[in-house]
Length: 165
Image (cartoon, rainbow, N blue to C red; front, side, top):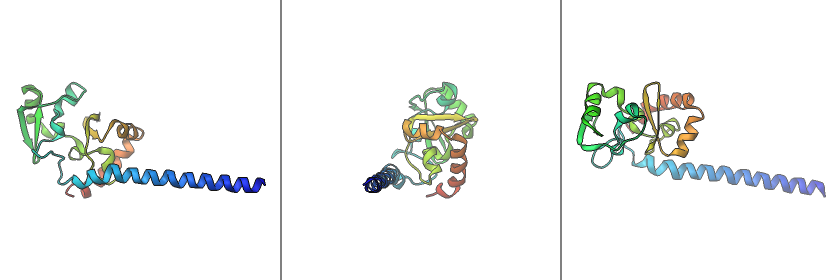
């Protein structure tokens, strides 16, 4: 009788594990596939050609937080238009755009590490070693923060291939 319970328990545990893995795989498809399918080109822009969903990339460095930019202060760089909160941020960007532009064209850093180009939430960000990294959501941001160096390394390896897809 104990053998039957053990087998049944093992079968149940194995079934739960399979269901968990299936759910994880489906979640990955749901989260990354539609968003990656939308992505094209090296810079993540909206229909109007605006990067970072209209947020000021300089604010992440100067203020340490996301700040919505204004169409009154714009600059073009690498095929995208960036919006800024004020003239000082615009001038800082114009002086050194490579310093302020987000990594991986403004696509989700965690997603790029996984081989995809998902959208971003401008509130899910980190400045690491003087570089801006954006992520899909705060939940994904927490996963990314568990191994920042490892995910950056993977994303750096994947980006040359993903960039123009």
